[in-house]
Image 1: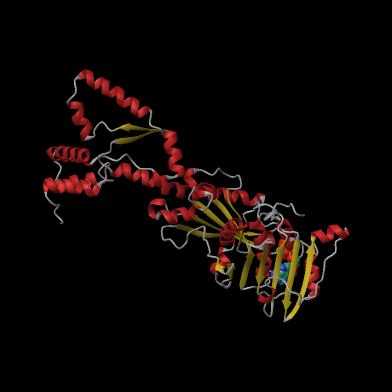
Image 2: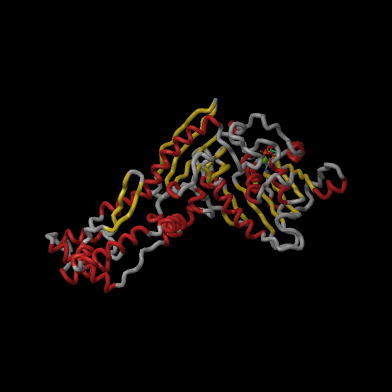
Amino acid sequence: MRDIGYSIDTALADIIDNSLASGASEIDLLADTSSDDPKIAILDNGQGMTFEELVAAMRPGSRNPLEERTGRDLGRFGLGLKTASFSQCRRLTVITVRKGVRSAAIWDLDFVAERNKWLVQIPDPLERHPWAEQLGNQGTLVIWESLDRLAPKGERGDLVRALDLAREHLELVFHRFLTGERGWPRVRMRLNNRDLQPFDPFNQGNPATIIGPMEEFRSGVHTVTIQCFTLPHHKKLSVDEWERNGGRAGYLKNQGFYVYRARRLIIHGTWFGLVRQTELTKLARVKIDIPTGLDAEWKIDVKKASAQPPFKVRERLRRIIDTIGATSKRVYTARGRKLISDARLPVWNRHQDKNEISYRLNPEHPLLVHFLAGLSDEQKVEFDRLALLIEASIPMESLYADMGAEPENIKSTDIPEDTLREIAHFTAENLISSGTSLDEVRLMMQVTEPFRSNWAVTEGILDERYGGSKDE
Ligand SMILES: Nc1ncnc2c1ncn2[C@@H]1O[C@H](COP(=O)(O)OP(=O)(O)OP(=O)(O)O)[C@@H](O)[C@H]1O
Ligand SMILES: [Mg+2]
């Protein structure tokens, strides 16, 4: 039972599920990380349990997974309280108050081993327990002691860091409860008195997020809803916001479906093997809402950390990926296309021939035309050779990898100001002498590298020589 595969994140989430199912509006994670015998507790103000309910709750498999439950009950197997707790600790105490009546029960694995019997201990409910004084007139306190996995005796486990990471996990998994939604009042959660902040993986607060329409489909008597989101491109966000939205694992890994069961996130960052996670779709995230009635069909596991879409839904999901893939790709290629088609003075031309794309120097670029005009025939041949070499050895793979990993850090080489000045003069002169108006020259240069990235300096240079533009 201890090794079903919970992490501290999923274990805490499973205990919080119980609190939410009991109607709690406040949930406190309490951790004593500094004492010799560290402890963790989850305190809620839900409706609590009677003594009989508590004893039943302590039994593994306390309820039948096939039993119908209300749409708000996040439980299914009658296991979570025990399996999640034992995955992290050897001693589980539950103190609960229903209508002012207090009951307590303890599972102590050492006691069980010693007696070689599954004996639950029933202490005097008024006995002192850590944090028990915080229980009000109703609610439940779950205490984990003997944290042999998180903080093994004699070893320096990093409980503080583990809890920090768990906080992030919970801010994502329960973000819809933390924010509140229509018909679902906000739930307040705290870790040692610090409020958890909802983390919305779809960044719906940002106007640059592309929000798709809500799609519904029926599965028996149940309704599943799907909604696609394309996150904003990094150019539209501050570095901080970009980093935050990427999540700890980054955009590439966090793209994909986000499956919510009764508004609680079960699984995310996967396309269920329908397509691969690629660079071009890394801004795509698809929200799927399923009710608890579809648990069996979607193969919800005891830890509530995995799900699999039923066969008949997969085809539908595949079609959705195709459309959202196209939007996400557009966010990327639109920038590429724009740079190239708007720029009437490109240094590089993009050639597309059926499925092959290549980049070549633009032989019509004024600087190039001028340079070639000054060469002897022999030098021209030599230059062509050099140009071919450069075109053939653009470091595509490494650019692609960098673009994927840290696009915001990629920068073109800086051009020293006097060089910029020279090519700006030269380009402008050249265009003017071929009959282009000064205003048009400005417009053309503004969308062309290297002037575009150095526009303030370039503009200064043009003003210096030709005076300010007309509309100034
Ligand atoms: N914080 C709580 N407040 C009130 N009742 C609780 C609380 N925690 C557990 N219970 C009761 O104990 C029962 C057993 O909880 P447990 O987590 O083991 O199973 P479950 O929630 O029914 O199913 P699952 O295994 O899917 O979590 C619950 O069904 C609920 O009735
Ligand atoms: Mg449960």
